[in-house]
Length: 325
Image (cartoon, rainbow, N blue to C red; front, side, top):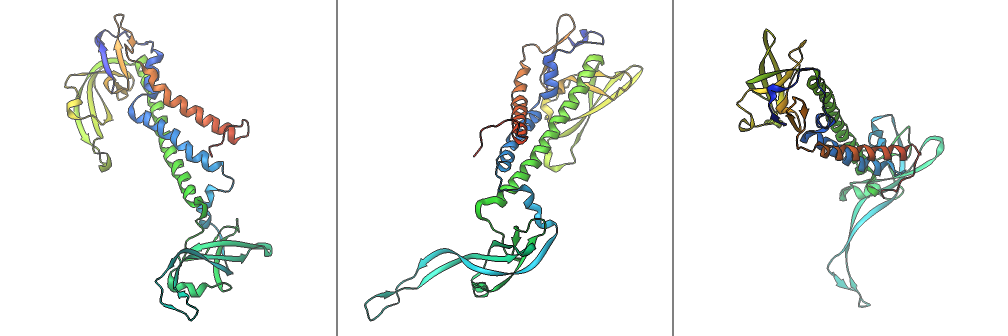
């Protein structure tokens, strides 16, 4: 939320000059926008990491949603886990103690024949102790493989091969893509609002607005987010504008708020106190940022854009950058 200084009623008539510093605040300011740029930068880390691994294909996470084929494969061997030696149960004639050994079975290795009589291999996990005898080496097992990529397979009812953590990294990749997309949407929305704000700062008509209504959000997850409605004189009538805010009642001013509105469409209005950063009106009636330094808003967006630019150059093969692993 911006702080408004100076004598607002002495603001010059439109069109006005908007300093670059106020434009920076309009485009990039505010905690939600800065958080969005931070999330967008952090999302690049798993995306870059996964795409540098030729053995990991993120689209494999959805491979079994496509066309698959069922074939009969052969169990190659069982996958052992922990070996536990039990208490001695006796001594033989040679004087050696006899022990029982408990072996944990984690899964099985299997082979199957794919297209063009090519043999492929896979692993399945999740065998119970009762199922071990059913999958001894050489026994038949039902295998499902992906038609577009026959090397991807699974045994229905059991876990897929989890060696190397490829499956986990695939879902981390897509989680980063989703979060990055949402963060980019928030950042672009602020840029869009910034363009509208600059237009109103340049050509808007000054007025004083009164807070007339406060409505809670319908989204229970963001209870603090509320819809504020302001009314202000616009020409011969009254204009209203609404905005969303997370400010508490004690943070809302009881005074009439400075507002700039579009003469042709009064509903398009800008309540200055709800802009990010700081705005002042100097002795000449011009807009200024005062002592506030809005260039701090530039750090995260600039670093984020540079990181994604480097990633794009690396992916396109235009430049060679250090690997992340």
